Every structure is written in structure tokens, then in C-alpha cells.
Image (cartoon, rainbow, N blue to C red; front, side, top):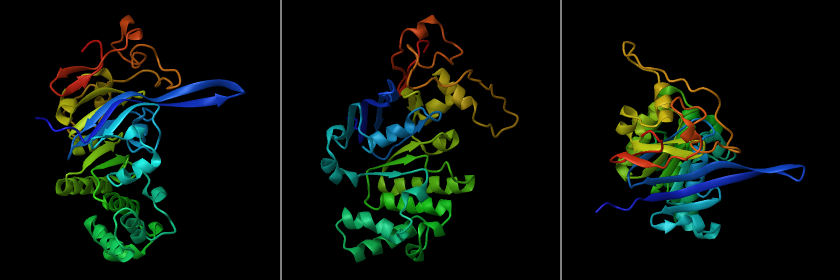
Length: 320
């Protein structure tokens, strides 16, 4: 019997309204019918161009944003319908690591206190016990105990991200949403942070939703990958299936843009024409048809359904 997923998102939608009395009111469909699953100990990578809605999906999963419609089932509970007070005991099991660790850390609080705070408020520890545990967590992420007395501005970007990770794992969460957690770091520091996340997962069986536009990093850390375009998931597969045999034309174009380490290996570069359509006025039919090199008249009218093209590999395209 297959274990139930830790996280299951069904037909998730988030629409933002804009405009007012002086201009026509409009709707931006930032997330428009996303369905995902994440199992215990698994890493799901979410990739796509800037503005495709991947960060909004992460914030909806954590209930940092209210959803327009859809369902979010976490650890057996439908958290999409819970109030702020009902979500409070669940918060400790769902943590996040943001792109900019400096913005997510209080500049007036030492990093020791920043890590100890959730342990004191949610972990049931006294202030002194929480501080001792914070020092242990700093050592876990490769920083010294003495770091606990310092402030965020006294650390490098990579060190601050380690501090953010230490705070995120402080309550032993079941799920961490990492939203562009390494994109602002140097390549060598990226590797250190990704390896740290790998090590933590092996020891605790945490699950990750790893949101990034860096395909090389996603390939290294992910078990499965979901590709988003204009608020929708167009392809989902295991890491090897997706990178070795992409089915959707958008995924093929994305992967063709990844630099090839072997200079003797030739790869056809697929150039997408035109700009990404506005989420306030998405195209009818297949949302990718305005840029797809294979589009025909049917693509402009009929929206493709998601099909399982091989075991565990799903894509939405009329020609698959």
C-alpha cells in the first residue's frame, strides 16, 4: 500500500484583483489550478520563469496567503480552511527559508535569540533551555557557538542563510518550503547550503518544496520536479525522467538553456519567441501556445488536460 502524501495540493488558485473606482477592475491569475503532492522525506522542486507563480504557490502552501479556491491537505488535515488560531499549532510543522535571509532576520535581535524564539514560544522550552538548543543548532549548520551573541549584519550572506535554516529546523518540522534559498549566493556557497539541506534531510526525513529558477541546483537536490508556466503546472516527473526525457515543449526549451559542461557535446538551443503573456489576460486554450513552436489552431481553443505519459510522468500538451 502506498503511503499517503505528507502534502497534497488540489486545484489551487490565487487571484489578485487590481484597479478601482477610477479604472476598470481586473484580476491577476497568479496561480490557476495547481495540483501537487509531496511525500515524507521527499524533495519536490518547482521551476519556471520569473512571474510564473512558483513563489506564490509556496506562500499558499504555508498559508501566508489566503487561497482563492482549492484544497491544501497537510499531514491528513485540510489546512486551506483553517483560521489563523487553528493554524497556530500546525505552524511548527511547516517552516520556510526565504531568498533574502537578512530581510527575514530581526536586525535588533542576536541570532541566538532569533533561533531560540520559536523554541520558547512553540517548543515548550524555558528561555535558558531555548538558548542552549539554539547554540546546538548553530553548530549543526556549521557555525560556532559564539555566533549566538552576534547580530545578522555581522555575517556573510551564506552564513545568514545557515542561520535561517537553523531557525527553520529548530522545531523539527515535517516540511520546509525553500523559496529561492540559494539564488542570491555565490556558486561555492550555493553548494554548501544545498549539501547542508541534503544532510539535514537524511538525518530527519524532512520534506522540502524547493522553489528555484536554477535548474542545475534543482537537478541536484530534487527527487521530483514540477514545471510551472503562467500559474499552471505543465509537467511533473521524477528528476531523471524530466531531465533525460522532457515531454512538454516549454520544459524542453527550459532545459535547452542550461549550460553544457562538456564542450564537445552539442545541444540544440530552443529559442522561445515573444514575451510571457500577462496573468491578468492569459491566452485561451493552451496558455503556452503564443510561444510554442509546435502550436496549431486547436491549441488556441482547447485547453490540454494533464496526462500520464509514462509511470509517474505527467504533462499537459495536445501532442503528447
